[in-house]
Image (cartoon, rainbow, N blue to C red; front, side, top):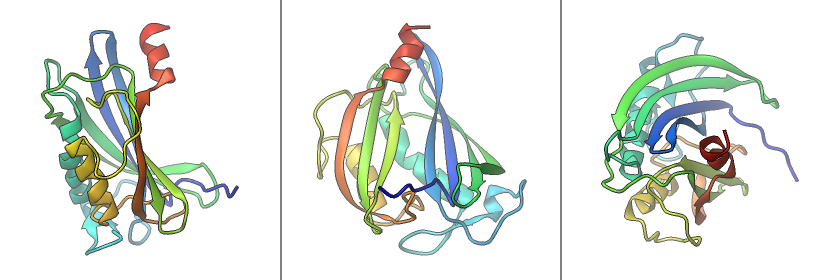
Length: 201
């Protein structure tokens, strides 16, 4: 099997989920491509991200649009989940070594009226235009563990996220640098690693 490396650039999105069993900060990693070779310290507003469809977007605009889309699957209940900030990293080609480029404050709360799923893990798996797969992972969202689902997804907010990715509205790509073009399935379950952090300190 071909080994695909992260990058060429990667957004690391940090979000904090308070639960009755403790508060954890999670990190969502999203591969992307940007125009040119921005120097470390360049503002997100001065970095342009490419999309499969449509015009390029400034990185801050692209991140804000993504956050506006995904906040609906994070809880707003007492001590709401907060999407805190994002970082942009550039990978050395063919390696797992990354160099910091930029950071961006967000501080947006979840908007769902449902309770977060403690230790929950929801994975959207896409087929890419290069034939590989792309995974988008959400930790401790409001999506309950259950059976896999396919389009149209029963959860309308997840359905909107998947549709937006397939439509090429977002700049996120797979590790094979292909754009997501079809949803294989949504897998709602539990993260053993997060469970251990909560209950096996």
